[in-house]
Image (cartoon, rainbow, N blue to C red; front, top):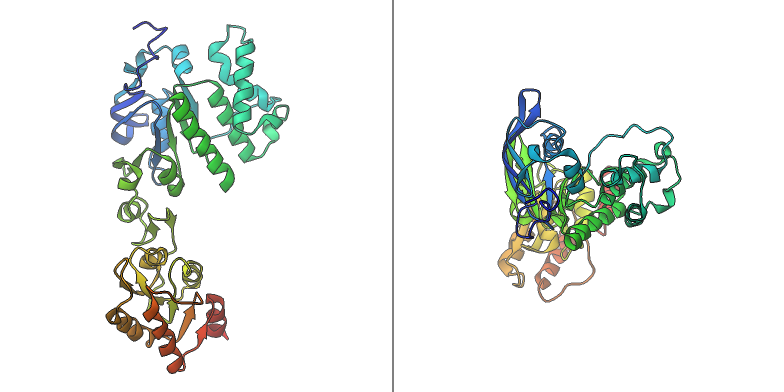
Length: 387
């Protein structure tokens, strides 16, 4: 295969492959034995605690650091055998850190992505100009074209650097924390753009992310790095379980809920003070408000995979569950009534009862019969508690 067409590989060939890769600084290995295969059109998320080596892996794959062991292959060819100019025409890199620029506009910075395709004088042709315009339009920075790059916001700078990487028209795209400094809407837009580029242009994307929920939503494959090695890798639903995320980041059990992709505060310690009558997602705000205040609470009767049931597993001191799709039984209602009567108050998060939770109405009656305060929100209980 000649240098002119070696990168034009069939879709079933791996775009990027790491074989037993050891990475680090100097002679000291930070992460050992990294193995990963990335196909064209695939988005891989690299996650792990700060300092675990995610950026070092990306810099080694980009050829900016020497591999301490193993190999990096770009379309079946060892990276060390690929001349720099050819590599730049197939691989684009966006790393953290601010590039040193003086008197450069945002357009100037994006245009730098076309230099692998220009002549020795670096003069951009019509095709190059079109690639620059398209990349700036796709990343939402066209209106910043004439602005001084050194004087735009962090989020705008991040988008300009992404535009530079995209206008290089890479076959492999390496990104270190591309969603840093971005607001929620911009994070989603950037990930949607990366998914589009991967799908429509067959780009292999490898991105380090801090946001577990974004990795869960956007990635085809997740690789988790911790303590000098790859702890887990695979499909997001296989890797990002409550147990594994807790181990990866040293979180308390139940802190991460895969169904929501959310990290919650630790469960307040102690016996439950207040009973929360909820269901169908009506209790989420109340649960979190009580957790923020450090108030241990009980709840029920909830169905096991109801939205409130999933959240209660991590936040509630006691939860009474019923099997999914079954009406609340008298047995479950009796257990909940026992837990309720050991509390100081009841918070009711909804107005009516349906067929499935009809027996929960008895909990409301039991609280009133016991002279227990029946409140409508966590705020009311917290005011009563401190008043």
